[in-house]
Image 1: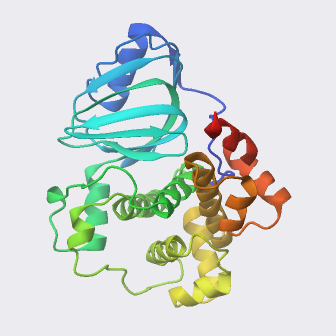
Image 2: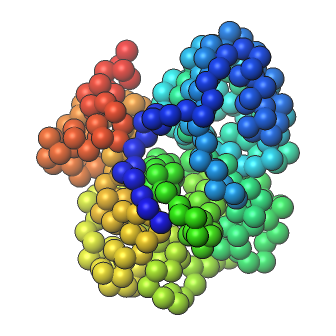
Image 3: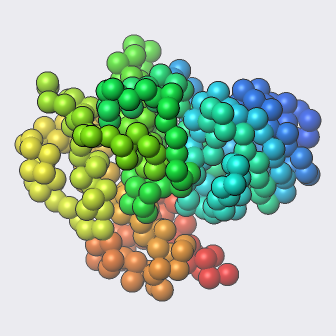
Length: 325
C-alpha cells in the first residue's frame, strides 16, 4: 500500500468537467440518486477514488444552485474545502463553510439545500462498512437501527480527527492485491464516523470493544490511538506518552500508523492540531494567528505557517482575514 503526501487541495486531473444538463445527469449517476439540481450551476468538476465499499469524491461547482435530493444508497460525509453550503434534512438545517464537515445524506434521508458555489470532498460509506463499525462498538446492536441525533461533529476535535483520517486514507494508493488493506481502511473510516457524529449506537453502547492486540499491526491499535489523540488534541502529545496510553511500545505504535495510515503518530496529531487552528481562525475563537498557535501548542511560527500552507494551500493569516471579511 503506497501513500502520497496528504493535503486537501484540488486533484491534478478531474474525471468529469461539464455544464448544464450534462453535469446534472452525471452527478445523479455518480451518486445513485435524483439530486434535482437547479440554478445557473456553472461548471461542475468531479473526481472519484472508488475502493468498493467506500469512495472519496472531489467536487467543485462554480455558481449558485439549489438541490432537493432523494436518499442516497450510502452514507455521505461532506468536508467543505471552499465556499458555503446549507443542508436540510427534515427539520434539521446545518449551515457550513470551508473547514467544516457534515453528514449530508444516507439511507431514508432525503435532503435539500443550496450553495453559492463550493469545493467539497465527500466520503461515501456503504452498508457493509457501517455494519462492521457498529460491531466494533456493540456486537449485539442491529446496525439498521442506527439514528443520528446531529449531523455535525460532536466536538471540534472529533471533526479534526475525522478530516485527518480522511486526509491520510484518501491519499492512499492501494495496490492491485490490497483487499486486506482496503478492508482495514473501511473499518477505520466507519469507526471514525460513529465516533464523530452523535448517534444512538455509541450513546447506548455498554462498552467500546477495542479487542486484544493479536499482532503489532492490528488496526484496533490505530483506532484506540486516534481516540487518545482526540482527547488530547489541544497539546503536543509525545510519542512515548501516547504509546503508554495505548499500552504498547513506541515502535509498535509507529509501525501500526505507518501500516494503516501511511504516517507517523506525530504527523497525525500535528494534522489534527492544524485543523483545530484553522477552526479557531474561522469561527472567531482566536483573535490572532499567535493566539490560535499558542492554544494548540505551536510555538514555531515559521513551522506552523509552512505546515499549514502545505495542507490548506494558504497561510494562517489569509484564513483569518477571510473570516474577518
